[in-house]
Length: 126
Image (cartoon, rainbow, N blue to C red; front, side):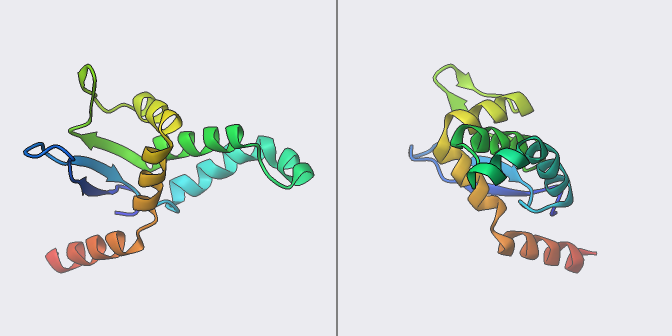
């Protein structure tokens, strides 16, 4: 569950529309931790010298990290042109362009209770 993700339903604002479903892995899953180290390494000196990473770099790292290891799939995502099929590239673009969406995915990935409950259900089901 931690790496394979848990489905989260986000209710639609439009009555009768299905919820947006996001398959989200835990933020500190082993794949995410490893990738974060790789993505952050080129900027370690810059962060040390400034005391922080510039927002554009931090956003790029976060979008790459979330799109490759945390946001694993979606259902019922639409834009002005209709349904948006999931791909890592589409996820990264959306995570970069929409801070609210990026924050929502990050919040879901940090909900420890979702992963503990899902793990407990798996144990009880076996």
